[in-house]
Length: 309
Ligand code: NAD
Image (cartoon, rainbow, N blue to C red; front, side, top):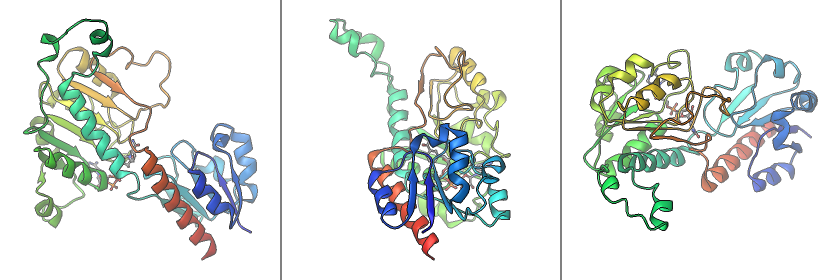
């Protein structure tokens, strides 16, 4: 029997479906126990990970029989893709399976940041009535949504934004100006500087690569519209966190939400602590009950088929 190692959490039913057909070790804590993970991989043919297991030479050197890596998500920056290709190891991401969860997170967060009105529960329950302070919120209808990256998640986010009456612009140099998707979706193509200047809500949907690392640095943040809000569900490292903290403290931006960070979890003394109008979530934009089922069953099915094939 082929052996499968799963080093981060996976839906229970999908694990059982695999266990019925393969020799399997499921230990969601293995990601934090490097020696045990290396040992577990000695006889493994398949490894299933989320985004925390670093699949690089120091791990792969302990996995001589590895044939396939299943990724419970889509970002591949924790996997050395070149090395996997050289060693003939197939990498299977869960394409599309958590995109709806991310798109909904972006729109909900944009509405929350623009309206700025949902943090008064304790005050109202305590008998206060902070109506004047909360009467200046903004509507999402009629605003301009700027998408940095126009792939699967960017396109779903565009559809949700348009349904709420937003105008949508996108910057994605890989999608050619003549590609049918612009006409089909009604999303307008922009260069990066124009996108930054024109949008009220900027949402990032690019992979972390050499071309996107540090893309939203201090000068580019300074080009954003006064009062605009920024949402990063893509990857930490795309936005300069210290520069973003400065822009929020200076009151130049209307708010920001970060789901992903340069270092996860955040180190003590992070520049993001105590910054006003900043929402922080622990890399959960793509995680919902529904997406976890879709992602896990898709990877179980495809890794199983690969091993059998
Ligand atoms: P995708 O591959 O469908 O789309 C990415 C798009 O980015 C592509 O169209 C590509 O052309 C574009 N791109 C690449 N380099 C660019 C650049 N320098 N400038 C502008 N555009 C560029 O991927 P997707 O499914 O839309 O996911 C996007 C990213 O979202 C993933 O790579 C992952 O890092 C992140 N993600 C995060 C979560 C979460 O829970 N926070 C969940 C899923 C995905």
